[in-house]
Image (tube, rainbow, N blue to C red; front, side, top):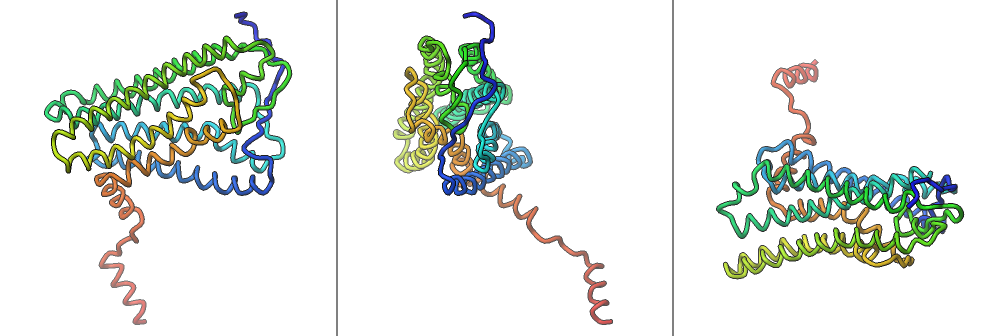
Length: 325
């Protein structure tokens, strides 16, 4: 492919989720509240994991990194989408569009690997409990996080290498709330079928391989627990069922949109909401509200910051003297 940038399109028009003014006002309020909840919920997890020594273990270290990725994933496009609900002209520069494509694949690629790392952590804890601290040591966790960012970076750079030099010389309307790669590629002035195949192969290998690893780890865990006791099986299934729901909601839309040559449909932008907005809000709920240790730490943090300040004995005496005067 010729390395020259043929683009004469300086900006793209984002058509958003709806053209209805009433719906846009509703979406503005709804997604603003959702975004604030995402930021606060995931920040609370990060603060809890870093501040409380009882959570300084591999599982919560990986959870803290997942929360950071969730904040990043929800922030690459959501603030602009919220602002666009109040704007008549929903445009984004060519560079801004490329940046959105870069960040969405960086963060989603990284999150896929982090989810696999968390599943592996649970596998070791349940299936090899005596060797847990040896296998899941500090270096192993650091390597897992580094690999997640490296995989995300390689994935997004390879995706951009297929698209950044495409010729955009005419249509510039993207029927989504952000620069979704399938819809942007469809706007190229040249036949993009080969590019689509390369993107599908890239995304397909990453999403299907990580999804297969996750499913395999959950199956192995359930089979292992099955032979221990029915009570342990019920507890493991209760925990893993919530995790599986998040995995399906995250991987399902990604696989549907990216695993075959692009055939865009109105459902795509609805599915995109799942892995860009709904999954980052579900993770704090699934991984904290169902976790006894995390709930205890959060109650401790809330009690520390929300409890009224205690008055010293001298302060109480001074107040009583003032009342007596």
